[in-house]
Image (tube, rainbow, N blue to C red):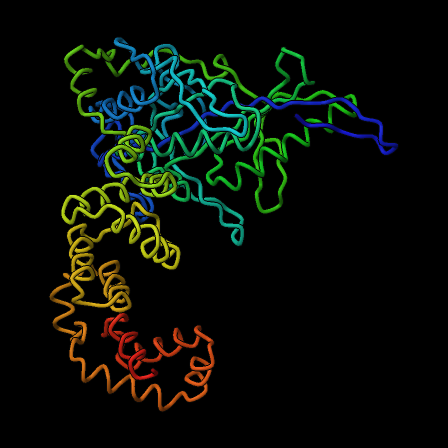
Length: 487
């Protein structure tokens, strides 16, 4: 609920916002939706193209079966009804990045409909309805050169397969929108249907937002903000558009139904065009593609291949591994993390220790390297092996952190690396005693502090001894010898 106040403190009208999303997701197929060109991100401009995806006259599209299977898998995971008989339609419009002057999409019979997913909100759990999911082809990309005052067109993205997930207008805040997008992103990543990298445009959202007075059931006039590809921009765009619409209503003006562009750098939106409807695009059934029939056997085959999703995994982890809820939420926050956790635990049977290495050292290195968890490439077997080496006191905890960093970066085999680098724990008591003696001799003040009752000095002396042993001694052995020599 959003309140406005006059300058004299008198409370004005209360408003609420209503939000629906159109989320575009590029699917993880190796080839495009209607041709065999590569979908790989980052190629040289106009190198992943052919006559079909650039719309040359006389070419015919051929539907990629994997696109349909990914769309159905997402539909099943979001509790949708699967349309057994669907078809494609032509959406006609001219724009420089659309070389055909039409886009093949689905208007009348989308592949999935009437679904929904549950999100956590400040008020508790809430279901956001999904009106439909349809398949379509992506357009090319315009690259604007401000210095030369011109634009270039890259058609590599043209024909990349998309699903568009259209929600019901069930969200009432930026927090709910982000919760919905995060849940949707995790579902799709767990399915392997897309990497959902917002920074690469493989997941982007259009925001349909309207404002109405609190208690009024009729929806206000909505605007649409296109192609937002970061959670930060989405949140800022929602707050900015909400304030803009409320200000208009307070001034007695009308909100115009239009498509707007959000400029995140300037923190403002501006109109692009008046909002079109289906008539403006002159939709008609795509004449070059036969209707799509999803037979029962095919549907069951897709259903059987559905992986365990995050919600189910969280319940099982609590049941099987007896881990704290916080650990479980971190471990399941990315499919790659969960996969490594399960595989490493199966090898060493130490779930809490595997969890600790993933939650502490792995997350630290991900932050330092500015990596996404899905980019992790080290072997679960190497992590399990490292844990066994620490538990067997072959190496110290300090050395283990050094070795893990090499595992993280280069996926080295820990036992071989430790032997080659001479990192095994020193068990020669006389060598440890000699190092401890030197530390005592070189640090008379901390020794005096300890003997004077300042027990914290022991931690400093232990650290100095570990440093002298280059981390290759058991801290408990050092503590024992320190106590002996200091007493």
